[in-house]
Length: 483
Ligand SMILES: Cc1cc2nc3c(=O)[nH]c(=O)nc-3n(C[C@H](O)[C@H](O)[C@H](O)COP(=O)(O)OP(=O)(O)OC[C@H]3O[C@@H](n4cnc5c(N)ncnc54)[C@H](O)[C@@H]3O)c2cc1C
Image (cartoon, rainbow, N blue to C red; front, side):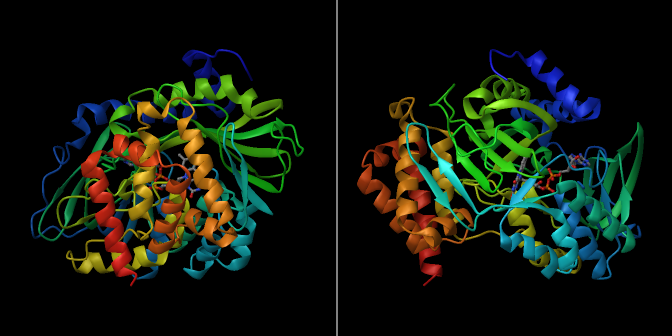
């Protein structure tokens, strides 16, 4: 898997491994970036008229987008609500692979969705440790972070079966094309195979991920890769160890202004999920970015891993990230709520939307249940205090100032991770698990800056004085809140 690869060849390889339907998903996702850049996607409601006060709602809650957020449906039905989930493709037809920590694995059963035995069947691998490694820098091992590989298909099929058993209406192949709010309900314009219909619901949950018109987070992480076979096993840097997760690895400097990162998670015997991704300002990522990234993935793979590697199941997507330096993504109106990637309340540093969604399932379902009755209940997606600090680091990674040079980002990351590692496993792991306290976070920044004083100028170059001010204010607020 080396040598120059064009976009056509990248498309061909994705189709060969994933079939036509998957390539269609890829191209649909890539095409949505065009609407986002032109601002056209913001238009909502043209196709629907607000329901009048007498219309009896078809549902209490409609979840638009049956990806990961499908997990909320059975929990809402358990609360006695009439729930529907609609998806432009198949509800629960994920094309993802997820890794997560023990807290997330346990949350799948503690929220009442599955039994502990059922959850055990979703775990396809466990690791003794993971690591981050930087080009021309060190390797920094950590334990207790992202150390479970989850079978996404089995999990979502399980959620689908659980939803059906709980009386949830599942609408495969239904696209939400617009909505209009009335006082007591929302009318949804829904398209299915060329036909249009209107559904009325008391609450619309927008779970359309990065393609939602409400997904206005300022950062984005284009991600491509998938399940691979044939990677050489062993302890060398070009090999994979079945019991070790590779969390963040760089193999080169900035290319095209972006720092590309690899990630590799062994799954079933002989299989490894591998991703290539980069952080970018949302407005800098245009149509076709995923196909271009796949071309890079195929061309550069040999720099990362050795062996006769072959892509078995492609997985890809745009993961939004909110730096907390700009206004939060929100739906206007009283009867629409954002969850998952559309809300982007997960970590802007690790982009672990699966972990954050699963940890917050109970609270989000509870909040949505209350919002059906009381439109004043606004926040339903769960955030974590450390994101107030970590967001600015993600913004710096997304906009490396020119003065950093090609290798400057690697050097900064190497310094930062050396500090995390020196702080002990819990200190290091707490940042990656979204649990680091504001005080520890400030300590981490100070130690990193002491070793690399140029970071002050670099942060100023990437964030500007206004951004630095908002960052400091946000951090201070969390510091005070934590006492
Ligand atoms: C390649 C990749 C790997 C990832 N790996 C990890 C990981 O290892 N760990 C982790 O914690 N997180 C991971 N994530 C992040 C995680 O997958 C997301 O945060 C999560 O899936 C978001 O869930 P969601 O329900 O908001 O959106 P999604 O799961 O993206 O689902 C959105 C759904 O909306 C549907 N849809 C879109 N538009 C419409 C419409 N108009 N009408 C109807 N339906 C529509 C789509 O078909 C899709 O099914 C990964 C993301 C990607 C892209």
